[in-house]
Length: 393
Image (tube, rainbow, N blue to C red; front, side, top):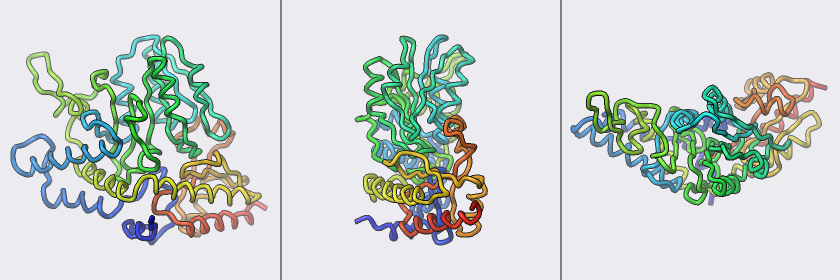
């Protein structure tokens, strides 16, 4: 039985605030923080660089972490790369793929800037980009993506769960369409991994990028990139740890994943991430998905009942609820909620300016949920937003 109150004991800050900004970053549970402290206090060394016992233990723990994360995503550890964040993983693909002038990429207006700007930047190299629009609820019709494909399309890059709408895209169907056409697929899983079940072998995508500090409950500065065919990419980031030999003007790269992880990695962060993933596994992603969906749909329904509030996104949403109070700027709403009720929500364009313009708004307020939120917190939020009508009447 899912016990949200027991879970909350592992997140001390929740005793101080109503935290509804988990789409930006989740809180990290005590066991993951303790795993990082253990690294610093007991065996801190460098990964893959030394024969002494501290370096050996560090290397073993780091690679054990890779096994843990790969198992969680149902991926091969040798194809599971540790990055700084989702942005870092997407840029690694964009900068390492063997593009040719005239190649074509299909992406969507839903994307976070991190899954849009790297592709737009490639236009400087002669790559063509098509952007597919969603409907007003933030849903992409896979047929529109298929219609956008050409004989030069090399990649479809699409978000799994919109960070603005909370809409869940039919990435399985998109991947099947791409497979039939011989097109690669990158999925931005920043808002899906840890929030909803993700099985990369079943999904069949070519690339999957996600962040450690969101649904996986890990620390900032950690991310994961899955590469189905590592030999397809020519790593654009080289340095210590990536090569097996250097002779004169030539060098030989290590096999994946080492060839993609240049320099000293975020060792304590990765160790903490693995412990956080184990925490998520113990609770169960399906249980987390049901809990978050229940709270977000309750919130959206109740906010929609308030005459002075506009709510965006589909009815069947993940744990994201964007809204506005017409007559008040989103930043003002956020500050009032924080200062009066210690409610932490995000305000702004959420690193997705094209979607804000699509909605014909400057910004929105976004409440987002995680495994540790409660129905009482929904009540606090709705009541606080309801009280704002006195400022706009």
